[in-house]
Image (cartoon, rainbow, N blue to C red; front, side, top):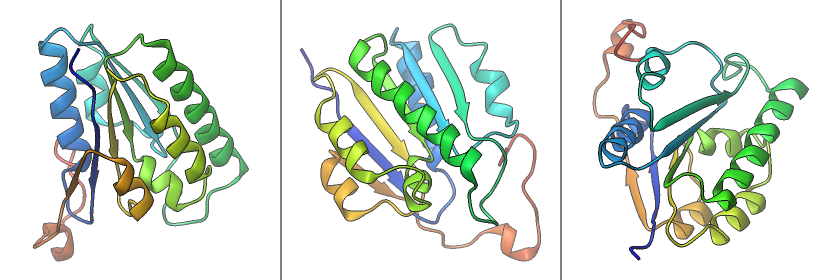
Length: 171
């Protein structure tokens, strides 16, 4: 049996979720079952439409709206906690080969749940399960628990010229 690894895609650059979704597509093409839990995200993104057409990929959002400009409320915390509990159960069910925890690092950064819970979940994962974690601000403890850490570094971004997020590219 080939062991599953823990990946982290973090940093201030663009492409963390995109990299995870690319891996999901590749895994699906290889016959693997993929579950994507999007923490913090609750708005409609174009990837939802595309991924729902993939029979081996399941995607679910555990965010309500975009609170990033404000502090998260009790409902945001409850939604994230529900997502974490769902993911814990799925990891141990062995129903999925690959589990993507999109924006988990942001959920931790905003203290929607405790990092120790996540670290315990990662330590107890089945050997064969591949886990991908995305989001800015990955902690050193989380990075140490991973087998692969990629940091997306912003060098230049058109957002700084006033160009807003574009459908099909950023959302």
